[in-house]
Image (cartoon, rainbow, N blue to C red; front, side):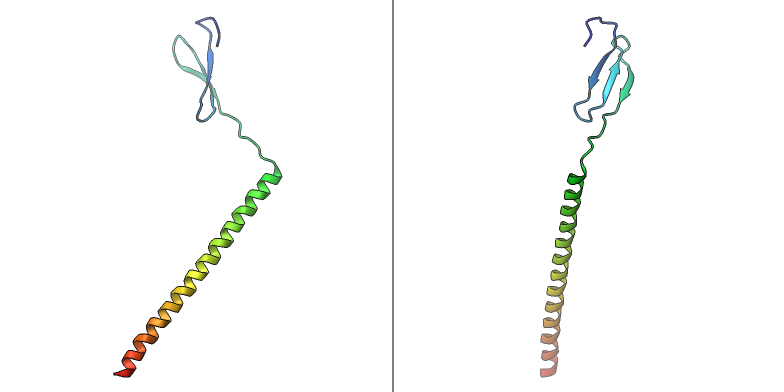
Length: 88
C-alpha cells in the first residue's frame, strides 16, 4: 500500500483473486483485473480425462448389473405368479 492517502491502492480478492484498484477518497473501484487461470500441462489433462473415462465405464457396468438383477427378479416373480395360477 502507498504511504500517501490520496494515492490509489490495490486489493486482491481472496476468493476469486481479482485485483481491484480503489480510490481512497471516493472509495470507488477504478479498475479491476480478473485473475489469470492457471494453465495445466498436457499430461495432467490426459490423466484427468482417463480417470473421468474410467469413472464412466464403472458407472455403466454398475448400471448394467442392476438391470440384470432387476430382470432376474422380475422373471422369478413372474414364474412364481404363473405357477400359482397354473396350480389353481
